[in-house]
Image 1 (cartoon, one colour):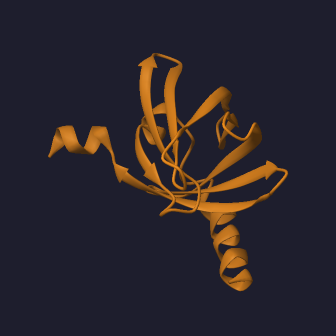
Image 2 (tube, rainbow, N blue to C red):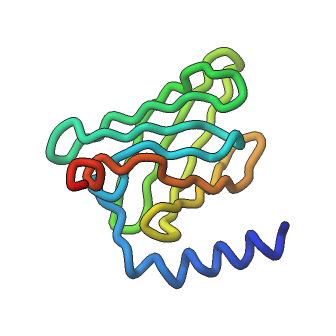
Amino acid sequence: MKKMLVLLLCLVFFNASAQKMSIAYLEGQWTSNGEGTEITIEKESKNKLRISQISSYSGEEVKVLRYYVDKKNLYIETLFEPTNFKATTKFIIVDQNTMVADVVSKFPGQVIYKRLINNKKDKNE
């Protein structure tokens, strides 16, 4: 498992230059297949996103305190109110439909997210 994660992280660094983090890239629904949260990202205005997260474990909402997008990464600070659990997550692009979330919290780790729906592609089909 560790070898696979190292390989995945290496792929992230090699592919990161090919895809830039943008609102268009982020829009859609992302899943971690039960390992974290289900995330929906929508464009609210030119430079503003609406991000909603639902815990894969409990089905309850995870409150997004703040976020920041730069050319290579998305950073989200969250609070799971039922347990007062705070985390800061750095999302790194792997490819067009995959991101790795590097979670900094009392329980750190990495989670792989896959795109479920890309609203821009759905409109063109």
